[in-house]
Structure formats: structure tokens, C-alpha cells
Length: 129
Image (tube, rainbow, N blue to C red; front, top):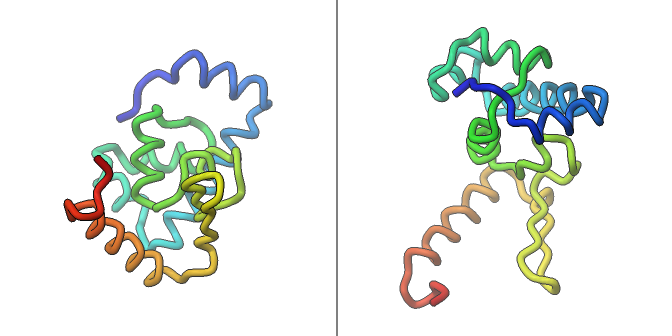
């Protein structure tokens, strides 16, 4: 998954004096450890080398956008959190008047909420048209 960094991302990184790299690296490492995944295990899931993961976590390199999106989905956090644009890991704003703070749920609660969401989406009765 490691490819050249898109120009827009390069500009963002340069503009932020590397804070993006540092924040991304720190949050990736924290999320991986919180989920009990080794660098080798994450590398295997993503079909990259362990060295690649180590470089991401040290801030030496950053992954392509598709990899960042995959990581956010894997760790169930917004891309904006992973990239340091927000500190809210589990807040979901659905509509202007509906706002959930998922930090009030533990891992099992979030898992159950995701399962219920999947159920609702798969049910024709509740799916948007």
C-alpha cells in the first residue's frame, strides 16, 4: 500500500511543520497497542512490511490516503482523528440536531452499537430509500 504521497498531502505536511506526521505516528501507535495488535500483525493485515509500519509509527514516512482510510476503519475512529485534525475519537454527528458522544461507551458498547447499525442497514424496513 505504500506509494508516493499525493501533492496536496505533501503541502499540508510542509505547512504544518511535520505536526501531521508526529500526530499520525503517535495516534497510530496508540491505537495499534490499544487493540493488542503487533506491528507485524498490522503489517500482515495491510499487506505491507513490518518496517513500513515502524516507519509510519516513527514519523519517517506516511501512508497513502487509502491506507489511512483503512486504518481509520480498522480502529473505528474518524480519519480526522487519526490525522490529528480532531481529538474526538468516537463523536458522531448524524444531523444538525443529532449528536452522539461515543466516548461514554466502552468497547463492547461500541461493538453492539455497530452490530445494531448493521442490522438496521440490512433491514429493508429501516433502510433509507
